Length: 458
Length: 102
Image (tube, rainbow over all chains, first blue to last red; front, side, top):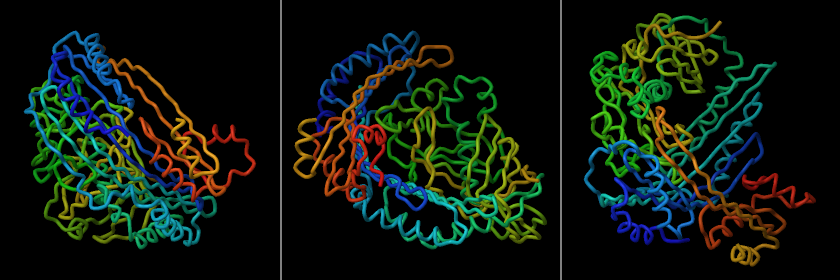
């Protein structure tokens, strides 16, 4: 396999020759393994490796991008990217200024998860699958495991030269129960920034998941209407990522007049205790990194501070176009794609109230947990919770069939009137945008209470 | 490709190598303006082996001397089923580009 370090060294000089307004290269080497089950049977098990790179050129506001995994004729690829940019650009290049960076960032993982023998990984998954199947009334299961290790070298015409390594582990288990034509399911999604140990020793949780799926078969459906709803950290984290976070991605905002008006900085979006953050700079989470794929150092970005909209997520281009500061949110899923504005680790900051105090004065409400599915369209969202319980007279009462929550994100943010002290990050998610999926992200929240939330039901 | 095949034949009873190369161009518009021209060149290699009567499979994209590819195919063969009597041509169609199925 050609050594991408050597190629990068040669490229560094080439990129500095004046050909375009801006030129960058990313070179990548990766290894992955995966195991999937459908029911009792192993569906797929395997390994793959990849190496390749890309060049991106900016000329008069137009971009040229070329990806390749034939690493022999890179100078031709530079010319191609430059020609593409030249035939695209008809305006003015705008890129927020950046000091060149030279750095090397190790993966920080003690043991590379990919090199663990497939037999060892399969053994663990077999144990989990057997636990689910040993639960009566389980109809079927699905399990998907994958891991990866990646080395990326970034360099540009401004003199940046950054090597970063990272690793990633994800596991998704689903238990599906059926009885008398009723079907219910509960899922468990976990992940880590490369530590295989994060998915070991889950036997208790897997057993509980299977029992929950079976319990849902005899649970009643909620009565539809407006309720005081308490979301657990997983569902609240998904809410803040999907319903609000995507509206903070500046590539959606900067050429959309309506959204630009909605997302005017300084607007009051919630109560004074509401703080929403996106931060790749938090160490050790799946969305963490030191530099983004444009070589911009990651920072902790407040999107909402004390209830007010104070920030949004940028690439160098969107930052320049909106006259704001880059936030280090330009990410590409792999070398075949140009970087676009993405979230990293997105969360609601913890407040000071305990879970018991949050539910203490709720006469009749709903406690919605875990995540099953959902969609957003501009400011409207619909989510289905994975589990739900009635709250009666300040106590968690009977289990319900999973509920659907729907509403307008801005009304919902305003209706958050209690924020717990128990922040928890969900590492099991992957985010998709513009054909780049699943990008490693995490999201989280403490328990939150929402007044007058619309819940679907009978 | 011959190099990979030769390497695979040293450890497996049967081996086949499959290579796909592609080059595509995309034209992207944003807010009614031409924004980006994009070209993606890609070469992928897949190796399928029969070792101890079991099928093993591995893929790589990019250039490779095949050492890791062969090692990966051998490892997956321990979970694979025997080739049975399925027509080999049919197998390629059914199995590309997924991994070994038991």
